[in-house]
Image 1 (cartoon, helix red, strand yellow):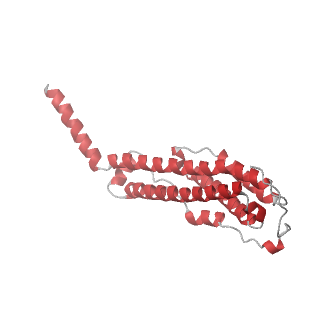
Image 2: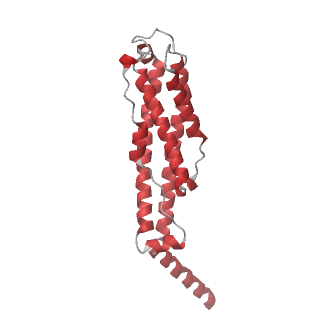
Image 3: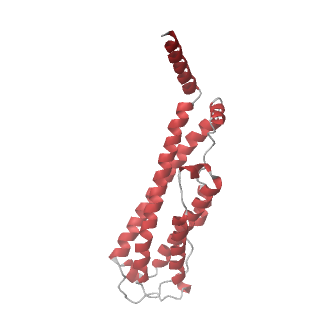
Length: 212
């Protein structure tokens, strides 16, 4: 009986020590970053799922830039080919590869939307207009999800680098997690400057029904 009380006391003492050194907080913040990361991935997948419909609709527009469509298709293929897991957060190379691929898709879609402004019949197509609104909404969702992830990682990394919780981080191998480099992706995803006056496509493209 006495031995049982000693074991119970030791367990309580260990629990207090782990709580005091930030162990439980690490568990909470680690789960928070994984949850935020999952939402980022879900929103990027939502955007990727829109691309085939956008491409199919735009293909019905006469004289639309084939190069622009090709780049969107290629960028989507690259972005969706990268397998991401919670472990990606602890792999700087894998995280950077994922971010770069998503940034390239952002840039390709931005160019497609910019070029589409030169095609009145496409702009008048209800299916394309609906897809554009959905894409804009998804981009907003991505921004919100990324912001939450950035905040979650910041809280985790501060804990991992602060004393004395950094000792717990070293003991249990809690390494700082990767975060988005917004400036780099913003440069990749910036909409291009398009001089419609120099484009080969006519100012008023022939009215061709877009496939839906």
